Length: 359
Image 1 (cartoon, one colour):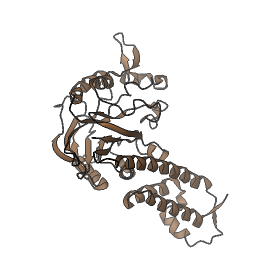
Image 2: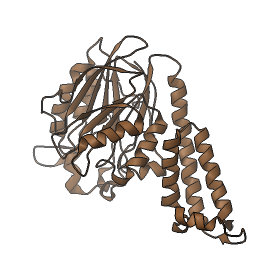
Image 3: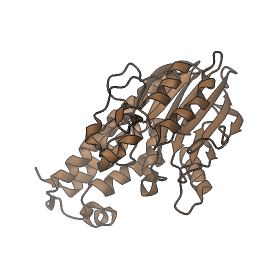
Image 4: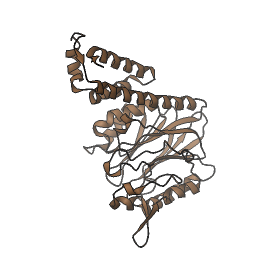
């Protein structure tokens, strides 16, 4: 079916208005919709061309059905994403002590993907979000931190990484969480990246919440196990703790991945290494230490919809699994999810994870 240019843009404008009705703030909506316009629609429909075509007679038609169909599919996926997040937000509003939290690995600071990443995070309407790989090409990492604060309208703290410039940023809504203590390196240089620790007072209840944010070693299961030993004490009875970040491990009881689809020279990052140099099952030592200590995984009983990596890099395609986690001790999870749709998959090699938690 041929579609007139004018009709195509009427549909796009209607979609934009619909996104606003879903509750996205104007800046976030515009960034996301404009990204769809320029990335999915034919170059002939880019802004300059659109202005020229707006005066064309209705009889001049566009036969680029595939472009519009692609937009329609991604728009539908984004509607599903927004509906799920909105439902989580409504559940979170049930009680004053409930907060929406998230974690997201930006992949090398986001680059030209950064505006769309921030639009997705704004749409998630989080009270607290942990961001990994916050690195800036000019090495002015605090400038990127400031951009995150401005884009999300949240307070932020940057924790410099000891490796690869993969810094951490913790961002929070000060009206919902009041920071009363902060340490950028709670493990005193012992982590491959770092361990960011913040203590918050919950205004509604006066209770205290410890937030741990980290990015565990991506290369060594031995190092991840050692790093996890620094974390287990925070699951002590009587403490309220959230642990967020890219832990570079699947869940304690997630199904065993089929590692045969991964090049063999990368297996040692993910599998147990025996003394003779052969490889065993997935290395779960770090995550099981956390589970045994008392950290609760809100995805533990879910059979699907929890995978956060395996969609981006060709060398790991086909190995869909978890790497990004929100764990808690002394708190109650109401719901949790992974933001997984075609548009978001193009923004990073990780997917955003969220949870609604009673703190």
